[in-house]
Image (cartoon, rainbow, N blue to C red):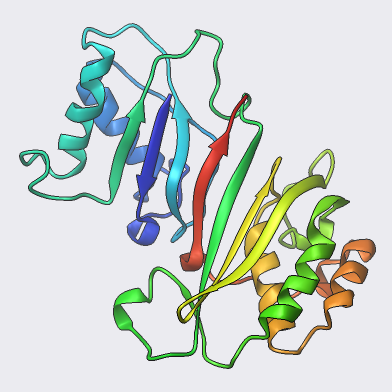
Length: 251
């Protein structure tokens, strides 16, 4: 099992694509070279283009000539351009690698995930942060956002927070364990954990809470949106660059 961090700015998302640079595609290319045999990764989260990860998880299996404890350093060396490790930093890094039982699967064995969404609220526009946060100039009412967040915590049918035209799911019921809203200097941070998330669910929740903070949606209307199951009753989809996959939970 791999624990991976990446800057998603220059990737077309996690999932491999034939004519685009993706995190899975880059990782498989490097691991295949290091292990001397074809590697196919199973990732836990198919993050979108521009989304970042502090703790993505992925797994692969096979018999390879290289010892497990050598794979991480050798791969990180390739991922930073083949330079001496530490002299150059790439946009993907393996943070940890460990052997698991043969039947382990990073996606199907996961029990939940935690995401963070970063909003720069006011302050000076910083061009060097444009790929790492959502800039909202008007002041946000944090207390109203916290009030609205209370309606999201728990087990609900979250169809209203699923992107329109998404793949039809067996169920859109999910459990959100926690949703914290807090200030950090000029930033408003949303941290959400749950047993699973629908396509664009976290970004739509972020966009909805921004609209609550701007006074465009009343906090109690969030409950009505959830009860309705209608996408048009929720807020906008916040941009990808503010989203970070923080952690994947197992037993």
